[in-house]
Length: 273
Length: 333
Picture (cartoon, each protein chain N blue to C red):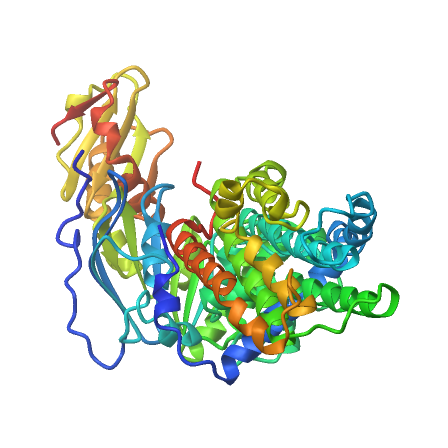
C-alpha cells in the first residue's frame, strides 16, 4: 500500500507554490465546512452545551484553581478535542470513502499539504473558540488576562497537531463515517475522563494521576491552565516556562506517536473489497 | 495458465531512450499479496504519441497505469516518465503530467467552477479555468453543485481537471465510459487537439473503436502481460481474416477444396456452419468460389471479413477457445 513517505520525506522547503496549494485546498475546505450544517452546529453549539455541563461541577474540588478558570480551561480543552479530533476523523473518512483523497493525490499537492489543508478549518475554529473563551473569562468571569500567552498557544497549537494526527491515524480503523461515532470513543472517553479537563487529577489516587498525565489531552489542559492562570500555584510569566517542560515533552511524544501511526496506517483509498 | 502469444510481439523490445521517449517501462510487475496483477510489462511511448492499453477487466491495465502515474510503487522493474521515477520523484514529475483516473471522487457540495478553481489553484502553470470549462462543454453547469451532475458530466469534469495543469503527458483511464456518442466525439476531438500540440497520451479503454480512432500504437494486455503490441495495422495483421458460409446440402465437409493461405477450416456438423481462417483473404475466397461456381453450388450466408482489431482483441481475450469447443470438429484444409 502506498505510504506517506514518498512525498513527505522529500518535501521541498516551503515555497510560493506550496503556500498557494495549501491556500486553495484549505479555502475549499472552509467552503465545504460552512456548507456542512452538522459541522457548523457542532462548532457553535458544543461550546454552549459545555458551559451548561460545567455549571454542575463541584466547586470545591478544582485543585487550587478558581472555579471559573477551571471551567473555562477545561471547556477549551474539550472543545479542541471534539472540534479537532472527532470532526477530522469524520472529515478524513468521508473524503477517503468518496474518493476525494484519491483524486487529490493525482495532483501536485503533497500528501502533507492535503492532510494539513483538511485540518485547517477545525484548527481555526478551535483557535477562535479559545479566543472567545479568553474574552468571556476576562470580561464576565474576572479571570486574568493570560499570564503567559506563549505557553497557552503552545498548548493549543500542540493539541491541535496531536489530535489532527490522531484523527488521521484513527481513520485506519474507521471504515465509514457512521462508524466514526464508535471508533472515536476510546480516545474521546479516555481524554474526557482522564485528562483533568473534567475531573481534577488531584482528587484521584496518586498512581492513577501519575498514569493519566500521559493521556494526550492532559498536557493540553496543563498548558492551558499554566499559560492562562499560572496553574495550581499561580506561576508567573517566567515560572510558567519552567513548568511547561513536562507537558510539552508529553505533547511532543504524542506528536511522534501520531506521526508514526499516520505513516504506518493511513490509507488514501477505501479498502478493496 | 499460459496466455496466448502473438507471433513475435509478445514482448516489445525496449528501444534505447532518446530525447523523444517520454514514457518508458521495463519489465514492470505489480503484486497484491500473492496475486501478480502485472507480470513483466515493457513498452515505451514517444513524445506526441498516443499509446493505448487494451484488455479485458482484470487484465492489469489500471494496475500498470497507476505505476506509471506514480500513484503506486512497482513490485519490480523500472518506470521512467519524462526521464524521472514517477513515484520517488513525484514532486518533479507531477507538475508536467495530467491524470484522469477511472474512478475518483469530487466533493459533492462544491460547484463545477469551485472544483475547477481549486484544482487550478494547486497547479503550477494552470490554464484559464473558463477555457478548460468551455473545452469540455461544461460552461452551462459552472454554478451547479457536483452532486447534481450526470455521469457523463462528471466524466467531463474529470477530464477538465486532468487538463487544467497544461500537462505534457496525459493519462486517461477509460475517459469516455458513460459518455453519449456526441460527448465521446467531442472528447476525441479534444484529445486529438492535445496530440497536435505535442502532448503525449497514455490511454486505456474498453472501446476498440476508440483505440482505432486515436492510437498511434497500442498493446493488448491479458492476465498481467502484454500479448500483442504495435500499430493497429500490425496487431490486426497478426490475425487471420474469416470466411464463413453454410455447407450446401449434399456436400460433405471433406469435399471442401484446399484454400491457399487458409490456417484452419472449422465445420459444425449439426448446423453445417463453416468457418475458414485465412491469412490471404482474397486468394482463399477466389479459390473457394472457383470451386463452388462451376459446380453450380450456392453457399448460403457467405461472408468474408478482414481481420479487425475487435477480432484480434477477442482472440486474445478468449485465448482462442473455439478450438477447444467439442461441438466443432477441425477438418484439415
